[in-house]
Image (tube, rainbow, N blue to C red; front, side):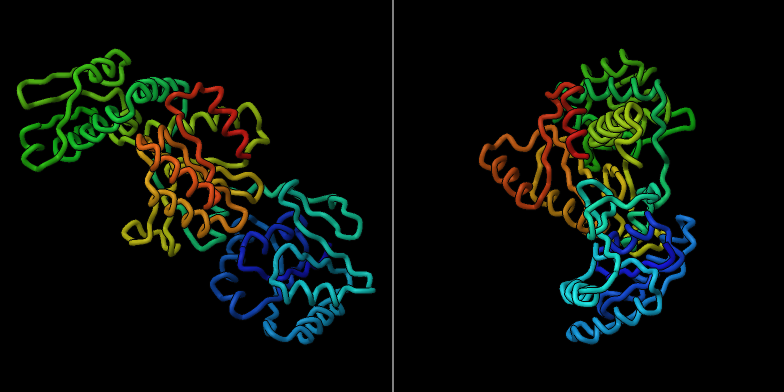
Length: 396
């Protein structure tokens, strides 16, 4: 294929699906000035450049209230490029109507993306197009296409030893999520307000923490279990002074933030599924920091963290993890992030240990999540790993 004619859409994914799969020599975008903005054009150009797809791009602006003019523009482009295909995956009603009128009674090839199969189909016979490329879309591709930037951060390396550590921590957490959350928060305070050396030895003055009105909680039974699992060692407590060593930096990061136990357990489970089925997903990451303005600036006010993202073809799955009571604000935050950086194909999921001890609040959150199109998977702390894997597989 030499030329692809695209009806420009607000959903950036619709603007690149066909071109990524077909890799034509040229793409002609037809759209409204209000929609086909310079910013969106730049995001498109960067997307193709970063993917190494060498395509010539043209942009034709049409008025959004003049059907006849839009039809004439389409016919003009088709006349210039008689070998073209018209993709109607995106585009508002006026553009779609004009495409229908322009193609009526003419030998024009029209195609559309089928999100259920993940394939492009010809509207002449309903068959899938052959000779299409594997999209191989990454998290960075999806975020960048929608104007954000994935900020660099220390990656989690899931080698066999660390996976065993994650399992051990999750077992401690699932016994009593509330207790674990409080202890993890206190461990984080020991490091933040105490001292941490190059050998991962942390020391803290509990009296000083309490003066600062920071949680200095220590559950000796939980500490003993951390020692038994070799997650910490050299533990000493003399009065209000406490010190110990973390097994390594990964373990330190894992157990000094209350939400990490569930996030890492979820991520590890997903990666295990991907290892067993390479077609399950194209990309997955945990703790993804995104800068909304795309300027790689950690100090920006619009920097947010997405707990887990899975990408399969052009469909991103945004997952929020809550290892405690779920509040409506968490649903709104997840919905906002998915809409902003995932487009209309994004799926929204929440992993939760529990929703609420109050039955009325629990039912409200479940209903609100359903209304917002959020899949709520809860009771994970009581769920066997095999069942959790099954729930994740259903997402994709």
